[in-house]
Structure formats: structure tokens, C-alpha cells
Amino acid sequence: MTEEEKEKQFQQRIDAGEKIEPRDWMPEAYKQTLFRQISQHAHSEIIGMQPEGNWLLRAPSLRAKKILLAKIQDEAGHGLYLYSAAETFGIDRTEMIAMLHSGKAKYSSIFNYPTLTWADMGAIGWLVDGAAIVNQTMLAKCSYVLYSRAMIRICKEEGFHQRQGYEIIAKMMNGTTAQRNMAQDSLNRWWEPSLMMFGPHDSESTHSKDSMKWKIKVESNDTLRQRFIDRTVEQAHHIGLTIPDKNLKYNKTTMHWETSEINWDEFWSVVKGNGPCNYQRISHHIHYHNEGKWVRDCATAFEKSREKENSSISI
Ligand code: BYC
View: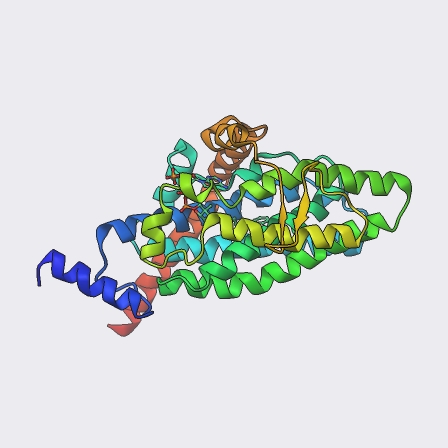
């Protein structure tokens, strides 16, 4: 078959709702788009451990500390599944990490904001994991089977993360005035960055057209953002929080909450590396990646010695 015929057949499989397995033929551009997105997603999970790690030793109770620790460990696990899925495109994790360190690979803009108070642990679980669930439930229907399978498992864990975050915020809203103010201040700071997680408007999104044609994404950035807004506004009101947007209003005809335009200059500035914590996040990763080299060397040496042992046994 010619390349053109192969592409046509590939598109027919996608249109028929078939899943693409790692060994199946796929167009180069499909591979590149998936690799870019999955590796970016993996880096987000790993860098995303830092803002919460900041509060691990200051959790207000042993229960809170145990839950936060378990959540952060889950994020590490998500990163590992996703690195493994991305490795099926022939680029190993060492190269992916080098791309992260050089700035060639991105991670979600949201993790470049600081966690200033304990309420931010609630806001991250509630809003950041909440936004991630909306996006990832869609990605669980992705045409590439390894990404979709990883998403199914990850979404189950994110459900727990979202609820633990909402519990923290709800508890503070039932507490003292100082605690309620802290919860509101946290929502004020995390609301707009959470909306940015869904990426630029559909009209500005460079990859959406191809990604939707290939069913990598089955719903658009704006559709998912609106779903998140509709869910989250109700949850905020339920516990007495105010969404920090003077233009927030419910449209009875569309049955959606309308919000102000997002500050896209801020979004692009953060994406380009100029957010409040971009430098800190990457330098921290580089530092601990280098410090952990001896662990990776030992693990590799151990693996090699086992392989040698196994081959001598079989002889
Ligand atoms: N941040 O054409 P578009 C978690 C970039 S972790 C940074 O719409 P696409 C958690 C985009 O990459 C899970 N960059 O792109 C962990 C592209 O630039 P390049 C977090 C962004 O890919 C720990 C350009 O803008 N979730 O839940 O079709 C603790 C144009 O965009 C962003 C993920 O990582 C952004 N927000 O759609 C707690 C989601 N948005 O690559 C929680 C995985 C856009 O051409 N990724 N850009 O240089 C995706 O779902 C999709 O990539 C996006 C963007 C929806 C983000």
C-alpha cells in the first residue's frame, strides 16, 4: 500500500471507533501529536507533586498528612504510566526528562503557581484535580489504546483526589472566620489558573483540529472548560464560597454559567516560562534528578547482574 492508502485506511479505522494499538501502523503526525501530549501530561503529573509536597510537613493533622502523602504518591504513579505509554513511540524516559529540563517539553501551566496556605491543598484537589477529571474522562475515549487505558485508571484515583480537596475546603468553610477567609482567598487565586488548564479557546488551539480528527481528543478545550465551570460554580455556592468573577451569571437559555474572558496574556506568559514558579519547579526537578542518579545507576547495575545470572542459569 502507498502511504496515502495507509493513511486512508487508518482514518477509516478511527472513524469506525477502532482503537489503535502500539504496533499498528499510524501516520507520523499522529505519533508526534500523541507523544507531545502524553509526555506533557506525564511531566504535569510529576511537576504537579511539588506544590503539594510543599505542605506535607505542615499538614494540620496526622490524618491530613496521610491523605496528602497518598495523593502525591498517586501522582507519581500517574506519571510513570504515562511515561511508559509515551515510550511506545521510541523515545525513552531519559530523553523525555532532558526535554523537560531544556524547556522543549511543556507541563501544565497550573503548577507554576505557589501554594501559600493549607487551603491551597484543598483548592488543588478540588479545582486542579477536578479540572483534570473533566479533561481525562474525555481522554479515556482516546483512539490510542495505551493513553485511554491509563486515563481510566488515573480518573478513578483523581475522583478520590477531588473529594479530599473539596473536603478540606468544606471543612474550612464550616470553621472560623479566619478559616473561611483563607478558603475564599485560595479560590480567588486558583480559579482563573484552573480555567486555563483547558488550553486556549478552540479558535486559537493549534492542535485541536488534527487531534479531533484522529480522536485523540473527542471534545474541545472550550466544551470541557464550560463543563468544569458549570460543575464547580454549583459546588462553590453549596459551601458558601463566591466565585471571584464580577461577570459570573447563569444563562437560563443555554443553561450554562457565563464567565469573564480569561487573561490570556498571563496564560501565555506562564506557558512560555515566566510564571511565578516556573524557574523554581524546573530547578528543583533538575537538582533532585541529579541527586538521584546513584539510585538509577544502582537499579540498572542490579538489573544487569540479574540478567547475567539468568542467562548463565539457562546455559
Ligand atoms: N499548560 O493546541 P492546544 C494533574 C499549550 S496533572 C501548558 O489546545 P492541545 C495533577 C499546548 O501544549 C494532569 N501548555 O494543545 C497532578 C500547545 O503548545 P505546544 C494535568 C498548554 O494539546 C498533580 C499550545 O498551548 N493535565 O491532574 O491540543 C497534582 C496550544 O494548545 C496548556 C494535563 O497535563 C496548559 N494548560 O490541548 C494535582 C492534560 N494548554 O505543545 C493534579 C494533558 C495548552 O504546541 N494535556 N497548552 O508547544 C491535554 O489534555 C492537552 O494537551 C491540553 C491542550 C488540553 C492541555
